Length: 61
Image (cartoon, rainbow, N blue to C red; front, side):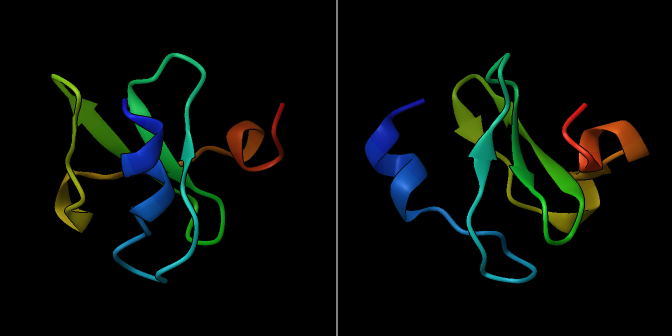
């Protein structure tokens, strides 16, 4: 994913910053504990498409 795009993207729920997952398949919002998928290099920023982070992911383990 383009770093310039990542710099301007924000969580659609809280408008906070997003972090690209290590495997580059998701954008993670720690505030809302949600992970938004990235499909074919395009972020899907819909709440209905996001998954909730599990406890280990919330704690960065």
